[in-house]
Length: 426
Image 1: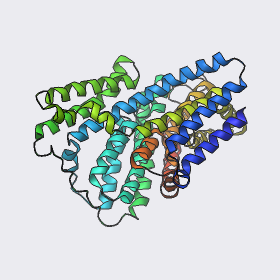
Image 2: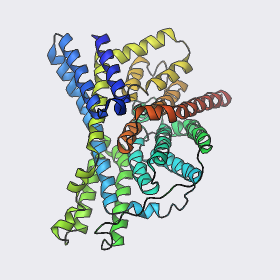
Image 3: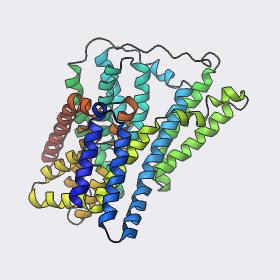
Image 4: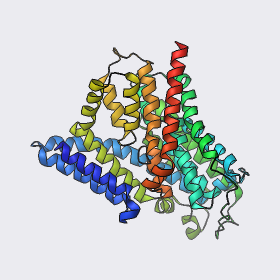
């Protein structure tokens, strides 16, 4: 059974990678892969009730991520509809490719630590559409956004879901993880930026400002109100989670409801047709729904591997045959570019106790770095990558050729810095 599921999983990932060659949307391939993995699982297990219970449990986690994504994309779409991003893009005056590369990289890096890598990617990719006209140029910036978002999320307890898991699980503490991973994460971004700077020459061409029928009559104060409200709502999500201990998607949905009320009040006196242009209903029509379905397919595929026990078995094999902690952690990190880092970290938490590795141990800190940044090696290896892939139509093979090597150089550079930092501090 395990071999059949792995075979279908590999075939599905191959179809996703060859999306442009086979002319089949990656969302369709992901959904088929996810469903077939569970079909094979339930066929081979006598107790169908257990499989259904496992699927229901995983769907609870998956739906949380999907609702989070849905809420974030709708908020971003509302800001865009009110031309709020024009306020930011008008202040980024540089058109030099190298300068913009570093500006976008560092904005993404630090914003990801405050929000999270998923929300940050959605916001920054939306901004790039306003700043860069040529699709080819924008793809390279989107690649750096993926690397920067994952690196920025790794050193913050609320920036990446795996770091958050380790924080909640008691394996790391907030102050210590920031102190220990800030420099390695920064190196993980800076090294790819240096390499990419050599190929970036000239200026980017800005897209012409989108002139719509409401551009001249939409009050500028509405732009500021919706932009500021939207940013405050996004920033408050981790605060909501920390305060209430509810999942992040609850904070995102609460924030969406607040922004919904704000926009409804702003346009309460407008004509019905005009009001609809700025409604949440219209924003929901405009968001990239296939990307959400793609995300669903990927996550239920991974959950099948987890339920069968393939990921846990793989982790045990690594511990048995690889004695070196550094190699184990880096291998888990790179493995997270193929399978989701959440079940990998969950499996690792189950394998190693706090007695064996106490809180703030070298192993847990390095694991947070590796699983947070290792996913950048492949475009489907992280939530940031999957979202960027959907929003910018990045092909798997293009990313593999153009960005993966940069992500790997950054990953190993940051890992070396972390190892040396620990060596000299101790």
